[in-house]
Structures are given as C-alpha cells and as structure tokens.
Length: 341
Image (cartoon, rainbow, N blue to C red; front, side, top):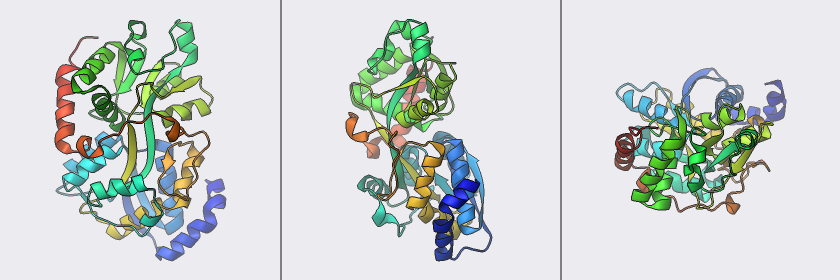
C-alpha cells in the first residue's frame, strides 16, 4: 500500500480537503468487483477521507439478494461494482436511492445513460464485454479444436471442459443467459443453454471463478467477461481470450447508494470519489481491465478494445427489469439446470 500512498497521496489529500472529511466517520461498502480491487478501493478511500470503511465482497446476485433481504433495516450504505442488471433491478424495486453526483459531467454517455434509465438511482462506473477464455495447454493436451464462436462450445468434444457461474448468484452468468436470448432469440437461446449444460463441469457461485480455475489448470474453458480472462493472461497463465464470432453482450458495471443508508453523507462522498479519475485509475494497480466511466481515467493497453468486438445492442431496460430477470431465471432453473449432464 505504500506505493499507492506515494502515487496518489497528493491527489487524495486534496480530495479529502475538498470534501472536508478529515475527521473519522464510517461507512459500509458492499462490493461486487474482484476482491483485490474491492480492498484497494476501500483502503484508498479511507486514506483519502479518514472515513472508516467496512467492506464486504460478494457477487452481484448475492449482494442484490442481501440488500433486498435487509430492506426493512438496511445495513449497507453503498453498493459498488458488479453487473448493471441487478443494480437496475434494485433501483426498480426502490432498494436504492436517487443521487446526482457533481462528477457526472466527466462521465461517458453510456455511464449517464445507465443512470437515466434508473431514475438516477445507479450510475455506470465501468464497462466490459462478455466472452470466454481457454487454457491453451489443456486444449492442446486434450486435442481440442480452438473455439472461436459461442456455438463451438456445444461440440461434444468439449464435454466436461466448460465452466460458467450460476445465473442465480452471478451477474456475469445472468448477462450470459440474457445475451444468448438476445443473440439467438429466446427459443434458440434456451436450446443453446441446454446444449451448453451438457458440457458444463461446474456452475460456480462467482462470475470470475471459471477463468481462475482455467488459469490454475483445473478447467479448460471459462465463460466470463473478457477483462477477467485478460487478467489471467497478463498474470502469466496460458489463457487465450475469445470474442465470440456471433457477437456478444456486455455489462455496465454500476454503483448505487442503498435506500435508507445509515451513513448517507459518507456514502455520497464515496460515490463522488469513486467517479474521479484518481479512484478509477486504481484499477490499473490490480490488473482490472474494464473500461472506466470517467473520460479522464486511464484505460490499460491490455484491456479489450470494445470498438473491435461485435457487441449486440443489449437491452438493459428489459433485461435489467425485475420481472424479466425472475422469468428468465425461473425458466433456466426449470428447463436447463434440471437436465442430466
């Protein structure tokens, strides 16, 4: 952490002075990004403001469920990170509250669009495309062909070699389910999920777990956001990142203030700080390769080039709604997860 203090000390001290938060306060942060990024955000905000942060890391689906369960007596203040769909659902259900940050004019249009679609109850903090990565050593050892499309993953030779998260707990996996429905149409999309199910070796709780397992050599192919696969490759693991040929969905990672937050002033200060270039540039310290929402933030040269990926026109309003999420998850539970493997 010493290097972070030196690198960001001046700007963070200036931010603390500007917010007038030199005295010790407290805040509870629910974080749905990767663990090391969550820890870095919490500790850096403490250094910037003197506000003590109690941070809990869970996947976006788990965090959404927790916030809903606690709605009568909210324990969290800010929910940072994770796919945007559950943030939109939380906004729709009144679980998060409206806030318009003074940092808003520094953000990309897609981040502001996310806020406007939710009545300003959430905002975009980063974006990233869905895809998959595979362990080239394992693929070669098992004489597997190189996959380049979604439908390649249905080939019988990949049986037991594919891993993804459970869409009930993982925002990444829900985005996968919603993307297949949008790419292929609902009927064919669910046929795809059924075919994929036959090749799945495990449904994990966390969205990034499948590619971490592939990096360790415990799994061959992991369906994840591409930036998570890039992190494994940059870390030296034999992972090749694939942007599927049919096109793919994407996420707008989001941030929301929980309705009924006990520490509202501190929550707003974190919200503003998290939208600053200084805070968003911390992603580079932990090899987080998403595209940041602040126009003045830095994007790693290793990050997937969104302009070179065939992105679908993902319908965030529809697939970020509570009714549609419940319907798709129930259909997946009844028609896909119950099938033999």
